[in-house]
Length: 244
Image (cartoon, rainbow, N blue to C red; front, side, top):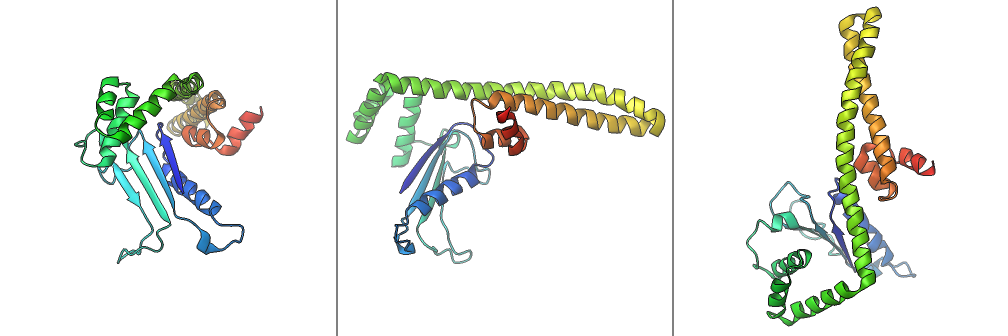
């Protein structure tokens, strides 16, 4: 069984997410008889437009379950592939079949028709892929779906920039309010201690308010879990905003 994922936006929790995808797929392969021997090998392939692993420069990483010291397989049922496109672009191309397919994907993404035609002439499999891509491009419904996804992606990026600006302004407002409150508290508790506490409280309140505003704007674009991770508020708070 194969699960192929394409992820454009960077996600800090993607390692756990891909393992969760595998576990769900694996659990679904057991038969009604419930015999574990019937569980099938499941492969998750994640094509990423961001760098997920800082541990190495490989654009293709494969993970399995192995014994710690001698590295023999527990079972061969788990296999997770991560392909990081930004790393691939820095590598020498066409070393492997995977390299050629990534080059095909790059040409398709950039709508480089001449290069796609050239690849279609190299091998039959690339011609079939190019023909399929041409048919999909001519499908009006598929085009509208693509435009909708592209708009959602652009909106998400715009919202991220909006959040950063909001956070910056919130920090400025919080700093100003904090100084004012700190001065007031300083009259009773000591000027120095009061200003310090007021600044901290003001910044914190300003940032939290900005996060809530951004989360509201993301409700129509992203799911609750993603909003919680991206914005940095609890999933309960996201659900409360959605109910409102």
